[in-house]
Each structure stands twice: as C-alpha cells, then as structure tokens.
Figure (tube, rainbow, N blue to C red):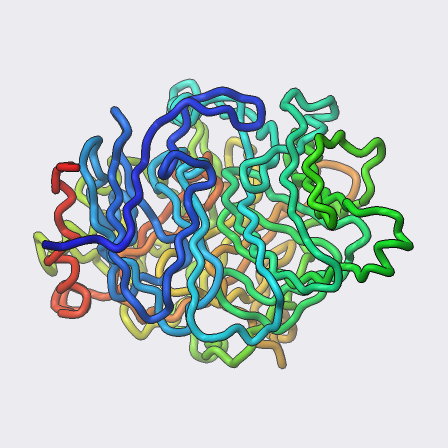
Length: 542
Ligand code: C2O
Ligand code: CU
C-alpha cells in the first residue's frame, strides 16, 4: 500500500505567542512548523491530516511551481476541495531541477497561515556561494485576537478590522519592546542566533508574517550580501539592512567578526533590530546575534542601536539579477498587457476588488481544477470574453491565458472609492515571474525600458506594490509595480495579495493557464494525482 514520505498533522491548540494565549492552528504541534527538506528534481508525497475541529484546511507549497502537480497546489476553490476535519489529502510536491533554495508551506484557508506554516528548503546541486553554516529565520507577526475572530470580523457586516500587529516574531520569539509608541506588553523573549567568529553564515529569511513589512539590520554588522530571492540565486547584492514582506524570502551571507575585532568591540552579543513600516502601529523588536552562546535572560537595549531607513520603495529595486541568464522576456515578446487596479470598496463590509472583481467563497462554487476535470473543455473560462473585460471572464470569474503567451501585468496602486489605500505584497502561484520594477505615478513603458537596458531582472514569486508617500505626511501617491509572465505551465494558479487580511477581504485573482487538453490530457500531471492525491475524502484511519 501507498506510504507517504512525510506526514503533517494540523491541530488547533492553546499556546502563548508574544504573551498572548490563544487557540492557534499548528503544524505538528509547533510554530513555526517543522522544517521540510526536499530534493530538487524529486517528487515527495506529503500527507496532510486535518486534526482540527470545525475548520477546513489546505496546504500550499509557497514558491514551488508545482508544474507537474497542479492538483497539489493547495488552494481552496482553485486546485482542490478543502480537507474537512478528520480527513487527509496526499500532496505530490515536486521541485524542479534548479529550484534549490528557500520556500515555506502554509495553510491557504483564511488566517491559518499566520501560524500553520513552516520552512521548506530545497536541496540539490551545490550552491554557487561558499558558506560555513546556515541559519533559518522564520519571520512572523502576532495579533491580540484569534485567527477565527480576525476572519469573522473581516468578513462581517459591519466590517471589523483585525487590529494591527502587536509583535514581530523571529522563529516564534518576540523581542518586541515598543508597541505603537508605548512599551510592549509581551515579555521580552528575543530569538538568539549563536555564531562563531570569522565564519560565513547563510541566513535564510522567510516572510511568514500575516501583515507587516519588516525592515531589520544587524548592530555593527553592516556587511550583508543578498544571494537568493524567492528560491532563485541572485548575483551578490550588498546592503546594510533587509526588508521582507509576507511571502518573500531572501538568503543573505554574513561574515562574523574575527576574535580580534570582537575584542576591540568589547562585546559578545549584538542586536538585530526589527521594525515594521507603513502601518499605523509602529513596532520595534530585537533578536540577538550571540558569540558566547549566552542563554541568560536579556533586557532590551536602553537606546535603539540602529537607525533604519523609513522609505521602503527603493530597497534593491532594479538591483537583483540572476546568477545565470534566465530567459527574461523582452518588451517585444510581450503578447498582452493587463493592468490590474485593486481598490478598496465599502459595501457595509470592506472588500478589495481587482478590476471590479472581488474574491469570495462563492466565486468558484466548485474548485476550478476539479470542475475542469469533471466537466472538460466547457469549464475552461472564455478567453475572448476575458480580453474584453479587463482580463477576467464574467461567467467563470477566472483570468484565462493561453500557453505561449507572454503577459505583462501592471499593478496600479490607487485609492479606491472608500479612500482606502495600502501596500500589497503580490504573490503568483505556479512558475515565477520577472520583476520589471516599480515607481510612483503611472507606468511608462518607454521610460521603464530605459531602466531595464543592460539589466536582467531576477525571477520572483512575491513583490510589493508600494504606497508612495510625500515626505513628512501621509499624502498617498499613485504607484505601480510591473511583472512579466511566460505562460508555460497549464493549471490553475492564484495571484493574490499575501497580506492575509487582504486575501480574506477578496484581494485575489485565479488564473487558468491552458485548456482541457493541456491540463487533463497530460499523463504526467494526472498519473500521480489519480493514483494517490485525488482522494480528499480518504478518511483518517490513523
Ligand atoms: Cu503563500 Cu497563495 O500563498
Ligand atoms: Cu494587500
């Protein structure tokens, strides 16, 4: 009989995170969940049990293309029926050769990803970079309501906001000292990263937070080199601080001080200072880079050691390039440009709509892939109708694209009728896209081509649509972010804001790449699915 390679069990348990005791969905009883290690070019079967009571579940392998296993992408209403309580689903998780890098997994149901999530590392060919050790840092944030309460409020009429994040978490620890200008109420419990002198560390930072755009730096260690973004190696990019949002990953080389440098500094512990950006609540938090394995209780620094930049819109923009050329589509190759304008709309509740379409549970009564499997060609969205309607088909509410198309998607960040304005980390499932930059004002293809001349953008799976602010006030300016997508992999792929609150408020689009024959008549894609993965209703006999 079939034996899965890895087993994950999601439970709902009482825990204290950042001083707040709540019921949290957890993977194998911990937050972050266990680190999963996969091998590039090799399929792994992961059985996910829903051991929660009363809540559905799916598990998504964030950043993996899943091009040979679209049925195992873990998206409710898109790739599968959700797993009901006391059932399991067998996921075929298949990183490609060349996918070595940093990823994560998380539930894709409502607010569960805030804690039902964990690191996923793809190993394989040797890294082009040398280092001695690696340290995985799972970034998170905390709220003073349970995920169920947050979800209910966001979907309620009248709308109830989740509240702002009350803590920044590194590997589940909160060294938060400042909450909205006052002292934090959570105990000071910073993550401690033990290092040795004169060694090079690869820090794998994973943006597992729900809401916060987090900026951080290392006290007296400003020699940071970004070498990977979203699962792809980049040419070395030096910086003195890192900025990471929900869904993003960056790997960073840091060479520690020599014994001599340590002695002259007179210190063995250095702060890692973390702050959030562009939210009404300002958080300041700390972790520790420790050269002496200090386990003694620490108290927060009297004075913040770093002054981190306030502006977020320029960090490594037009900077990250792939180590090897990666087939970046030129402007001439683009077959279709789609402009997507997400705006906040008040309808009693508050929703986000993309070109007038907001995602709700009712949008796809049957998950698109399941519907295509059952109903065939007739379930494929109408391409011509979508082209005439800002990109989406009015009947199926999906965004179709044909294999072979090269899309240029421009996200326009503008204030909507309710006046709501925010920043958004946009994440595409499926194969990664090329980030063609961002700016304030309106996208000007001619001007942007000048910036792209001689530059090969890195592939990404999550990039920010920023809010541009005139210095010194909250005046909010129009801005854009551009991406190019080669439509190569048939399947159903979500493209959404990775801020969990916004996703729940409808900030998602679902794309159908290819047609019936591309998806269902592809024996490679269907074989594993039909043999093992298709049975959402396999009952929990364990
Ligand atoms: Cu990490 Cu659709 O999500
Ligand atoms: Cu958003």
